[in-house]
Amino acid sequence: MSRYFDAASGLPLRPEARRALEAALEHGWADPARLHRDGRVARQLLDAARASVAACIGVPPQQVMFTSSGTAAIQLGVLGLARGRRKVGAGVVASAVEHSAVLRAADWVAGGGEPTIVPVNAEGQVEVKGFRRAVRAPGVALGCLQHVNPEVGTIQPLAEAHEAAAAAGVPLLVDAAASLGSLPAPQHWDVLAASAHKWGGPAGVGVLAVRSGVRWRSPLPTDDAGRPAGFPDIPAVVAAATALEQAVGDLGRTQLQLSRLVTVLRERVPHVAEDVTVLGPAEQRAPHIVCFTILYADGDVLVTELDKAGFAVSSGSACTSDTRRPSHVLAAMGAVTHGNLRVSLAPDVTEADIGAFLLALPGAITAARAAADSAADRPVP
Amino acid sequence: MVEARGVLCPVPIIRLARAASALPPGSLVELLSDDPAAALDVPAWCRLRGHTLVAVSVLGPEATAAPAVGTPAPGTEPAVGRPPEGQALRHLIRVEAPVGS
Image (cartoon, rainbow over all chains, first blue to last red; front, side):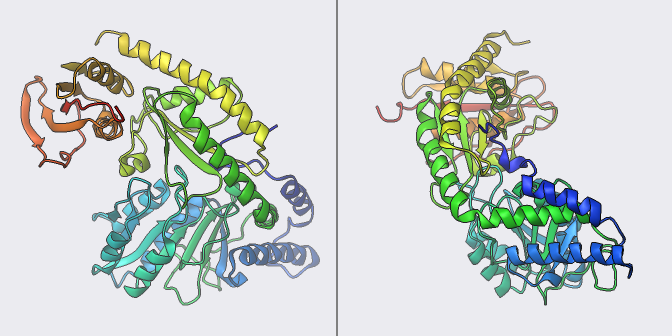
């Protein structure tokens, strides 16, 4: 029984990936640049992993780089496009609901200036007209748009955004961290970033794909092929490739199964207690992510109460965090930021798991609301 | 008036909801809060509950009402900004009839 409902934060290593990791630790330890047998074995493992990931994304292997994390892939992608297009300018266009790694990288590139942030609608979808207008402005080096929003599960209109960027001659970086392995790989991008931890590979492996002809220049010192110099962690990369192959091979089953279970959650969670609503669109959504607003409760307390009941979920609320900064995604959607609950399903979740969750949820909500109620009763300090 | 300075979300919204539920449609509720999340949650809660956010203004450190930062045209929402560090916002909400009644 799986009670891990925080797949969008990271999945445990898939068993096949663990076996591939162990085998690669034994055989793939050598320097892949060496000509001896051990070196050639390591090189073959690396090349095979690259070819496998490239096939899953749908690009030739030479367009795929491995990085030390999903964040590193995003940073290399953004900084590399900015470097390749520095003669054009340092402008960056990004949706308001990008991952903070994208927004921080955009800030970095913009230097003293500010990236152009394109608003989203109440369901978290970027406004295509605004995106089109923003990429047309002079001095824009790159545009950034996620495939799927990791907090709410909204699928972004990549085809339209990519068409708009291409028409303006601006390359589009697509953050596919929340979707690769859960949806067919997106097609409308110039640079793609993803993270192995999200599809059941090991933590510490990111993927950066750059289509040929795109003006991306490594922001770090390079090898002869123009990639950042140095080799990735070959056993980890092999495990990541094995996990992705399996995730993509299972898509036919998982997409349908998870989407059906999310539909059950979307229908039933708003009825387990009063003042509970679903966030995000019913149609253009990832199969495995769903997000709720539970009014008059503290999101962190909900997470703790569900943890006590044995369920791992997450929250975009930040009522008790030190920063006191609520989720920029919820803020951009104009959604209530407190009482936020994200449920993201792992591929092995069953209907029985969902049933158990639906049974545990009312108690957790009651407890979280009681705690918030008594805090509201306390006199003003 | 609902005093919610010095407390964090969701407490300001809970106090606001309690006050609103005790009042007939058309009444005005004033909420004072210095939680940055409340600046986002008050308009979002009003939209969700069908109430009208009439005005938002910044309170000075002495809790005297400062000029409104946004008094909206009919049918629109006032501009909402983050309160400057250490300062509170005053939200003015008109209670509307419950949705669906």
